[in-house]
Amino acid sequence: MIAISSKKNLQILLIALFGFSFGYSQTYIQGYADVVNQCSQINITSNLQEFEALGVKRRGTTALQNTLNWLRTEYLNYGYTASQLQEYSYTYSGSTAICKNLVVTKVGTLYPNTYVIVCGHYDSITGTGTNDNGSGTVAILEIARLLRNIPTEYSIKFINFSGEEDGLRGSQNYVNTVVNSTTPKMDIRVVFNMDEIGGVAGLTNDTVTCERDTGNPSSNNAASNAKTQELITCTELYSPLNTFLASAYASDYMTFEENNEVITGFFETNETTHRHTASDLLVNMDPVYNYNISKAAIGATMHYAVANTTVLSNEIFNESNQVSFFPNPSSDYLNINKGNLTTTTYTFSLVDIQGKTVLTQHFENVSLLERVNIMSVASGMYLAVLETDSNRVTKKIIVE
Image (cartoon, rainbow, N blue to C red; front, side, top):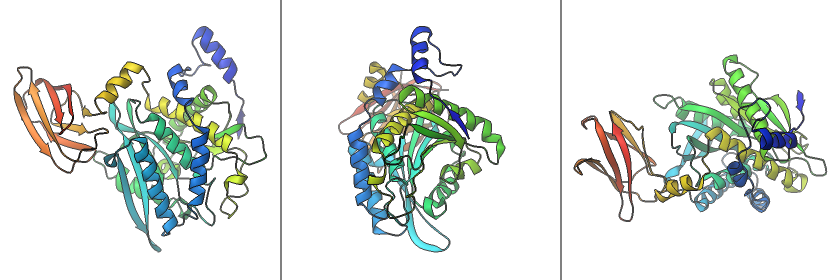
């Protein structure tokens, strides 16, 4: 393993004076820092306490289901809608227990069909798993909370996997039944995994391990290394932590790695001795360290998804309830993203430049994304209109 000492203070000084950052394409973005600094130590600690109180989250247990319910409630309280949350149930050979992955989708503004996956597991074995992996779970929650109202060019999927402690079962199921079953196959920009990032009580926890792909297939190793170098830079720009470069292993990103996806991840540098025991508890962790890693993770997620933190952009994004239509320009089909509208029905229309409605379609029991056939629509510029009982969103689109 190669230790990488932090150059954060010198980097920020050089950025301020000259606008560059040690040869990487990344620079300090004040808008990103403003979001990172809204990360809450109170949220991190209280969520760890709630996670711990839910008990041993073994497959098939009430505690595992209760933890899933708790996660759903947290996302909904942050303002995500039920249509943005999906549960994927599965079983596997040797067990009749039903396990579930929880996926929260935030649709991107420019590249809605390309995803940044931010993930970690919420199941545990023997103990409550407050560090392994309540620590990663609460970091994902804090990222999702802070990015909900911020437009990102790329879509984000926040994924809470079950079955990790039983051999990466949840991520295997997701890759097999969702990633590879999408037509065309799901386009993943990067998989950013967080597992066991709670530190060790009583030690100096000032360094986070950044993990990259060094295994087979090797065709994705260079891209993984590049994304991990970006993770290192984000950590040094947006948190007080030093970084340590190491290889990825034995967590949910490995299923994606084997599928030839680009992966990276965070892991604690001082490794706990309480993993997979009844003493994996908050008292044996460092919640301030968990908080600092969460700050780094927020900055990295904004970087990977290309967040737009300008006030005007945010206002326009949220005034339209994050509704979008894509691709734009379009030819055969148009996708409708209903954003954070809570409605279960709406009417979609296309209106030409003369004000004539050329297509109308009513949707019932709508999902987050719906699809409209526009092959019969003539080429030109139109207004796409989504109407509910209380909302009307219009956007210009081009039909080719």
